[in-house]
Amino acid sequence: MTQSSPKSTDRADALKSVVRLHAEQEFAEELAAVREKDDFPKPENWLTSPKMTKLYLLGGRAPNGMEITPKYVGDPRIIERAIATLATDRALLLYGLPGTAKSKVSEHLAAAISGDSTLLVQGTAGVDESALRYGWNYAQLIANGPSVDALVKSPLAVGMESGKIARVEELTRILSDVQDALITILSEKTLPIPQLNDEIQAKNGFNVIATANNRDRGVNELSSALSRRFNTVILPPPATLEEEVEIVRLNVAQMGRALQYPVEKPADKELIRVVTIFRELRAGATLDGKTKIKSPSGTLSAAEAISVVNNGLANAGYFGSGTLTAADLATSLVGAIVKDPGVDAVAWREYRQTVMKDREGWDDLYKACKDIDE
Image (cartoon, rainbow, N blue to C red):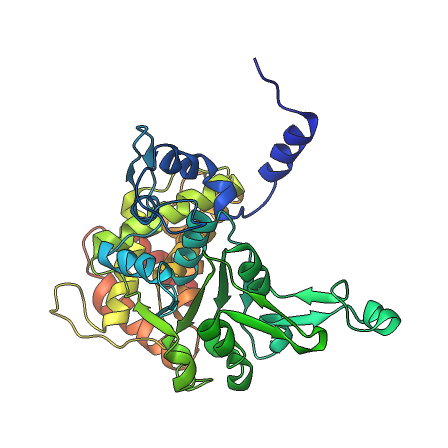
């Protein structure tokens, strides 16, 4: 019988206290299961075949019988296109509204294919070329001049050297002239280092997944030269109420395991009500189409619905009865909807009075929200 070493035991204990594990850590058993009998064709340096990567993302039963939880709920063809793109020489751009799981899909694709989702550049207006290419350890640079030891490689450079997937989050938040540092990397699969008269050439398995949301359209548009290097896959909002409720349920359960709220699992009734409110306000009409309503300024995505439920669970666990109620949800629900006190408050008040007030079985939620507004 093999025994765990003290180091591995310490590592496992340390991971238990981490708020959010990387995908390859949290789903290590599932990744091992889909790889166990993975005899399907796979590109060089991929740890998981495209077929088993799809299974890992969409969920199902692994060849060894283990049940794989879905990481993405939606059209399977979207995931197929994303995986197929990464097997070519084109980079992948996941594009869509905020809260459509772009970052999550990006992370899980990297975890499945490369076993490492940490080669990440977080796009902001403050990102410079060194974050995409390389920088320098200035102490060593001043002492010894340009050298390999003084070089600080970006996540993309590390991905090129190791044949792994690198990720760029919120690409359109990065200034346009900095974005264009990607062109040589994506087209030539080479990163020149003129100071050392050297270069980094990408190994098989290297590719880039970038994400961008269409709320940032017009902020820092991609140049035509750069956009041609990407294959764009659009992640749409959940198509149905049932699909969105399932997304919220899966993510709330995942976060609940990590944060260990002292609360019972939320009833489906509460998840359905939150998602229904968000979908109706987004659409500007009730689900049956009979009543037109004003839409607030926020996106009211599935990600925000998850946040509302998680906030309600924390409130129920630490200040309430230990069971999620309408009163526990109301505060975070109103806060998520009313971002602009002028426009949003009017839309929310109209919805509350014309839709919630007379909806059967919603008396408690209507009263809890009304009490907060008053």
